[in-house]
Length: 121
Length: 370
Image (cartoon, rainbow over all chains, first blue to last red; front, side, top):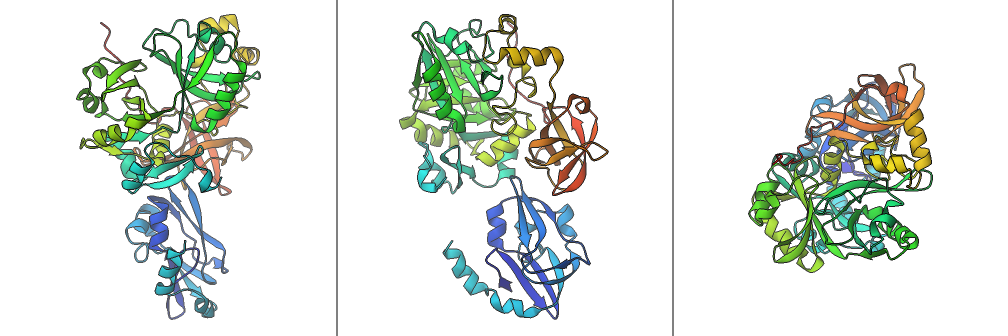
């Protein structure tokens, strides 16, 4: 699993990346009450706002950590947005993306580097 | 505003000790949440929530001219407010706009006690200092202010003073409580029964911890304070009302006393009376956003043909009702209950309907008539 400075995570299985927001980001947001995930077929570029996550207080954009075509948005989050708080880096994933260029991952942080980055915030 | 510029309340260390997440609000470093907004919201609706609202401005207006001078800028009749009572009012500008909304009452033998919004207090106090004439004087009170709100608040407080149980909604008295001279009003900003308690700053932490030692009481941050007041249909100054909004547009005409309307002797009276007679161009309504994401402040409101007719001024999920609610302004032709509208959330139209406020029924304590 790799992480961005904007607190998204990516896990690559073959050419399909599962993406979500980190536990740190979910904790910082507080109670998640609404998630808008991208629809299948949508093409995203690195840095695109591809999803929205809302706490009681505010809406936050989620940026695509990797480019490609969305295969699936996590339908569970439409009815159970609290899954993001309960299991941000597992069941609370946002989308699966068919990756066009996996080399982007080389520029992202691994868990140890991300944990170190969090201590600098 | 940088963190260094933020002021603190006497309870800052207590919030940090409870692990609160702190944010800047109204110039103060304030707790936005402790265990979580939803849990704190629900706890307040079911038990008793304790809020630090010491960032709000408290002051006393004294002098034989106090009421007459104060009334120049507010539309309430304070001559007829009885000792031991308070009344919600509005600080108005010459255009009839709401510079602030506030509570003003008579807990003292003389003069008025006012509580104003944190973000406006410096402007309010400067305005009153500059404009109160005669022997009326503003004295800022450097005290802490706690609010205890919820269906169990009265039972919690009854253990500390029998006199509190005798108070009805909007009573406001000076009471010896916690071995201190406290100014207590039976009111709040959640729609629940409860009290706001002004205590000397030096006693704040002791009183806070004493109240929290009751298992019916939990600390509640500004996040839930906002969702609670939204459900109660209460406007937030700077968002739902401001200096460019009149009480008629905002649906706050209950704050216009009959005698004061007849005398038309308050700031902005001409504009306000004209709007009362002719009808305003826009009015504040409650909205149920029936699909999609919560509509936040700034979201556009459109009619069924897609024409933009207004804006959301605050909105979000209703934790008590599990639906998305909002307040905003629309022309009166679209303000009828049941009117179908659209709210544009991130450019996408979502179905909405004009509904009555408060969204959640209020439970203020009305004393049985003797």
